[in-house]
Length: 173
Ligand code: GRF
Image (cartoon, rainbow, N blue to C red; front, side, top):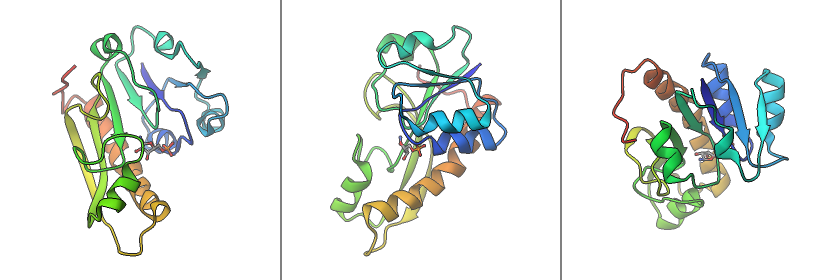
């Protein structure tokens, strides 16, 4: 059983499904999240749960995939379930919810995204894979986010496939 948890648009969820990965369930904490329309269109069962989202993850879940899920999970949860996340910066730089803006404000010339294991802190778990892009002088938060999203849609499915095939089982959970 593979579960995706998402709070927003869900473009990463869609890229994962389109890559051929079988997602069994989507859990969202937002009743108006874009991921709901995508799940409906792609025929993936979804649950909306504002508070008890952790309780909806089935016991036999092999991997929990966070794809723009804007809530911190409990330590009990991340100890129980192997959980991965994708973050729009080259961690350990620029953790948190405003990573793209922080990278621009810092004037970095290279940014990108990071797939990492999830622990009980935010964006601190062991790094699994990264992909990078150039930051141009005229990049805005929007244009850089777009570039990073394109990287995400490639590296996240690729990395998840490797994890599922157990080529990489270095989970810190
Ligand atoms: C992505 O930028 C991801 O790095 C971050 O949340 C965003 C989700 O985008 N964790 P989407 O909802 O998959 O389009």
